[in-house]
Image 1 (cartoon, rainbow, N blue to C red):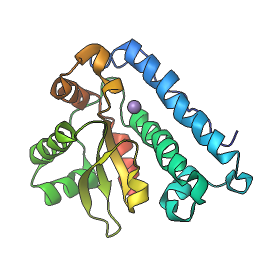
Image 2 (image 1 turned 180 degrees about the vertical axis):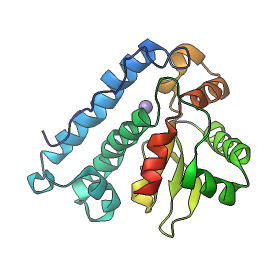
Image 3 (image 1 turned 90 degrees about the horizontal axis):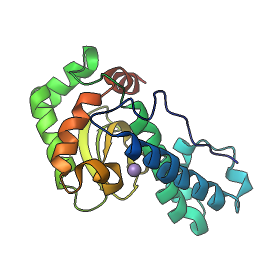
Length: 201
Ligand code: MN3
């Protein structure tokens, strides 16, 4: 199999009380695992793509063969997005970034609080299932974008730095329809060292 479900760097219950253990178990072990399985199933038809890194498949989505382009977008996007999401969080995270990332956030958005408000609004207002992202664009500028379903920022020429999953499966067991409460709790989990490392790549 060309792609594998990555294990988490923390226990399923380690993000409590902000994200509960059952949600983490189902989200990682069922939802994310299914994206990986379906991506591999699609790639069965094109062995020549088995060695291609997922990032390259997504950045070059337009050149992926027609018969699997939709599957790579959905399931490859799902695999990539979730792999970033798990690393973007850690037990005892939160607070604010430091260094060059903090400076870029300040110069782009006016300050951390303005960035946080704008990002939270993008995530809260994304209609239906999707993600909100802090990305670096091709010119090196920070941008906040939200995308439907599992569309990856990589397919839009953006480099994803920080993403939040706003599909109901990410929060419904604990928060039901209260997406804003989930988002408020999620800020307590951000692994800013991971976000800064992506920014510095
Ligand atoms: Mn999800």
